[in-house]
Length: 262
Ligand SMILES: NC(=O)c1ccc[n+]([C@@H]2O[C@H](COP(=O)([O-])OP(=O)(O)OC[C@H]3O[C@@H](n4cnc5c(N)ncnc54)[C@H](OP(=O)(O)O)[C@@H]3O)[C@@H](O)[C@H]2O)c1
Picture 1 (cartoon, protein in one colour):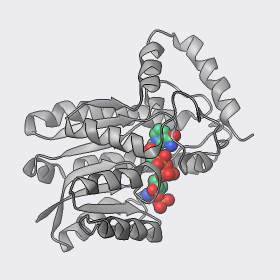
Picture 2 (cartoon, rainbow, N blue to C red; picture 1 turned 60 degrees about the vertical axis):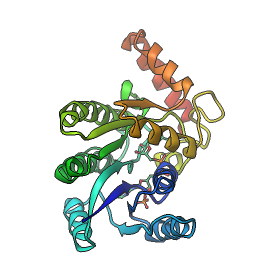
Picture 3 (cartoon, helix red, strand yellow; picture 1 turned 90 degrees about the vertical axis):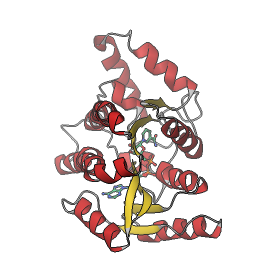
């Protein structure tokens, strides 16, 4: 079977840039998201610029059968993952009691359930190819987030789970890297109900999606456990450790209120 790099959420934002970076380094890609036209356009662009022709799998990762479908589609094409990049995810801004409960549970299905299932589903082939897993968390994973509570908690899960997986899989020759971006201008903000530029745009914390993808890729090939994208975000995460949550919670709540659309 041919080794491939599976990338979720490749139809836009950080995922599309990760796909361009992995393809530029010679990987054969499997691109997953719901918007088929955007995935196909990216696949054509990668092939036209000399990369291997990517496989497009248009599916909803929130569905319970998504991982089984991916496995079947790969097997039918004689492909198996050497690398898995779990990037698909979304957030919702607002008070969790006021936000739609089903939408928040759908966030857990995507950000946590699908990421966990895909991190575990292909371990034999990752071991065989001495490949790895690149899981996209966020600097939100380092603190509680009133005003975006379920999202922050979902990223805390990604960070904790992926760090533990790093330790479990390292002896088997599989690297696991958690990429933690700060603010990146993508489709994320409008999906979350955040004002454009509401969180950190134009500040020392903001980076373009391409730069985040390059930093993530570099950390992944070096086998780094956690990669925080950008100096401003590294400093923020470092100093956050010394701030008691009693102080941090109102600061985050204030920031989220200002960043929200309403
Ligand atoms: N932008 C930021 O400021 C920021 C900061 C820290 C972390 N992150 C994280 O970075 C990752 C990528 O986000 P982004 O900023 O690039 O946002 P984005 O442009 O909105 O991209 C999100 C991607 O996830 C895919 N997706 C969403 N729901 C899906 C579903 N049910 N099934 C399959 N794919 C689905 C979307 O594709 P379809 O709509 O085509 O399905 C899209 O490709 C996320 O995990 C996010 O939490 C973002």
